[in-house]
Image 1: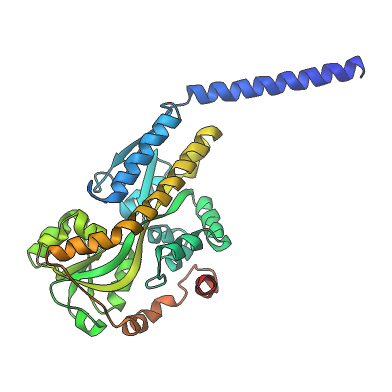
Image 2 (image 1 turned 135 degrees about the horizontal axis):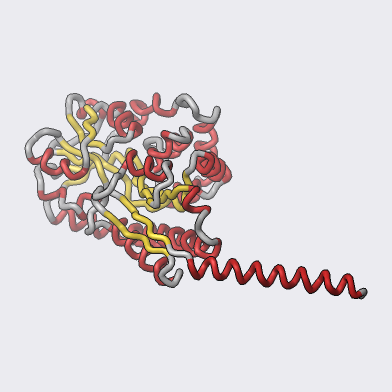
Length: 334
């Protein structure tokens, strides 16, 4: 090897070494505090899961990444929470995918009613190329999706009277979140969809402002909905309750790669652990609710699916054939 070539190799090695040292120094000096917001109560598993993930990230990044968790909509939540992300705030929004549908309409198809028969079907669907393409479109809108599968149960109707068909819901005011997907779903099912903040919901039920609400068994027991007058649960399974975890792409790109890997791994692991935990707990939760006087009943699924059929028509901005692709993916799993 010539002296010139030797010097070139040495210089290249020195530059690589200096670059590596610079990146290490950057990581060592990096500090970031993120505020994480969601609407769930401290008693619910999603809150516990988010707290556990935040604690693990703090430990594994050596204190570089601090995630402060705020349950029960103490900070902006729902649509306003996602807006914080899009604006580039040091903020993590934990909401269902329908709120991302305001930016990437295909997510509304992913969260359409009565699509899934099990938690596992949804999880597998989120791992397909179809959903990878949706995530890429979200990133183009400034939204980095860290997870989509913090599942908290199928949402059912929780009311004073027994509901078995869409006709039973006529004239009934049912509380929903403010998402258009929820409002459209409950309206199609025959109810008068009534958006309310969660903090006002239980008092609204007690005072007769609404005739019921919709939610999972885990929400029912975690927030003690069963203590009110709504003792009947119609097993509509109209929406699979799941949350995604969203952060600004601008904020994400500012985080050193080694910390990005830790954050991503911990949120992915947290989602998997939560799904497995809830699957194992569901039967016990139902039995406990029944011990409090809650009564569960099946519904005319065909009648509800027929009522919901208009929601499987592509809306403006959706990829042509997106519902057909989702149905095809689900059929292949079955």
